[in-house]
Image (cartoon, rainbow, N blue to C red; front, side):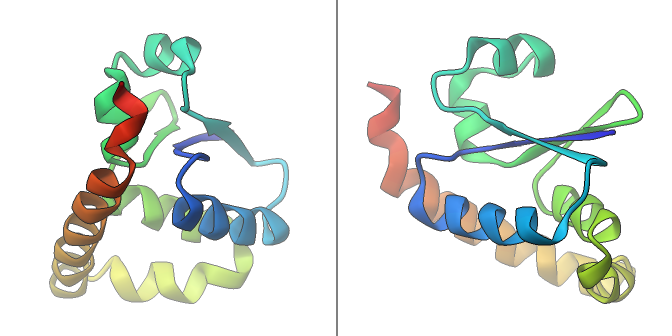
Length: 115
């Protein structure tokens, strides 16, 4: 089973994850990190780190950022094509840059959650 740690209090994050949930099966467990100390304990990440990037645990390994999308796409049949495209190194680099920019601005938008 793959555990996906995401920020459900972020409107954009929630909408995207809810979309993936429609097409996923029991192989993915969706965990909201908002004020979730158990998520912090399981991942060994701070609340800020969990809000800043999406994380997944697959085969006992913690993965974050753009690579977490690859894991989701690999496990959601409708998105297998995206997985196959973006696992190619040059294309993954583009995905990673785009993800970091988007994640930074979403974090700024949602940093009020840290108070």
